[in-house]
Image 1 (cartoon, protein in one colour):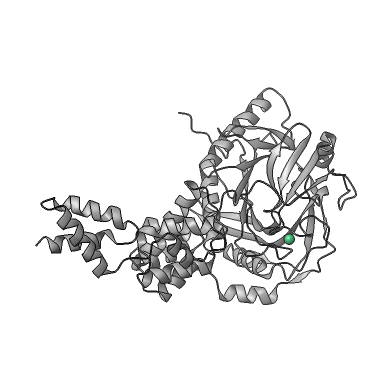
Image 2 (image 1 turned 135 degrees about the horizontal axis):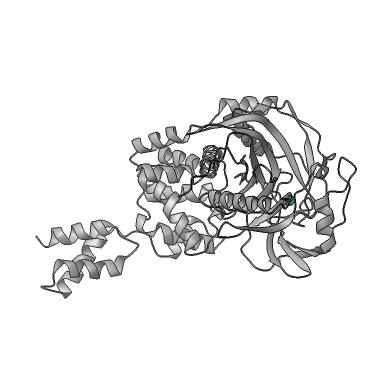
Length: 486
Ligand SMILES: [Zn+2]
């Protein structure tokens, strides 16, 4: 095996980690930050994009390239999560204060210098994913760092921006974007110097993600994290690998890009400054030229934001580190693994609240937030983000009062997600999952036992369970059968 000397080849790696924030409302309007799973939008808009000169007076090379393709862009609009701001028919509202506070908290956790005043900028976006043709972005802090096993990695910038629309379909002459996701606040963390190797880049990306999630305000859903990686070697040039889908693929993408650039340099060819799409095997293909500085200009519809008051609040409420959270959860009986998953689930705050509020087993509550929600999402393809704090509160209250048993939690939440108007209590009733009393259970065991005289205990338990599934704790059934057979 050849071990590559990354310093010798002049490897430079920069990460851009995008992470959506879990606020109720979007960044520049009051629409909810939900994703729509239904196929049919309430309305559609068709637009063609026209190039506009940026701050420098020049039209960006990437813009020109994209305009050449002259694509028809179709936007799918959903009335309950899009408004006139999203379709660029109304100026942006005052920026979401909660999102600003989370972004300030994150900048603080990365030890950044934070600006007294934030100016909203417009960044030209060429792929059609925003109806306005630009993305609003705010530089929150610069010159920070994150600790890794190989020393500090510089955090060049923490930015707060609006997320773009979701690409749903693409063919030769059109691209379709769904606007539900558009406007969701997201932070972008850009690294500077300090990444020494491809493997180190993976570690730095993980450390950055851990810090963002430690706020408990990171959105956890498919596509909520996106990572781009910039790579160059001596004699080559900066190339951006767009959307690396997982942490483990980061070193693979870097290794492959090093080889590609080395190959070009060896053949005496120039490495062009490109944005390259990352493919599932970690190799890349040309997407478009790398945009230059020409694509930023000020957003004049939003006045600059003073940060002093929000920053003060953010500093007062800095979150615990991941290590502290895990330690606290372990004291409540959670395994280290469950604690880690809970900390990364974005539900830490609700967990703490419900464990304090109701007499419920913390391991059970954590299990619902980690395992039950994941199963509903993966197996049932349901959008668990539709579940509110009130829904969870109702569920854990019913559990603590013995009005629903833990074995039925998954079913109750499934029915809730499939029937928008129903409350959790309604769902328990609808499913007929109201637990049966101890006396009723005893009566049933007696009846089944007398009908099956001489049957082994296991069979009796099986027959009772078949009748009371979801309405009685299996342990209680076993105990009663045991007691009666003595
Ligand atoms: Zn809106």
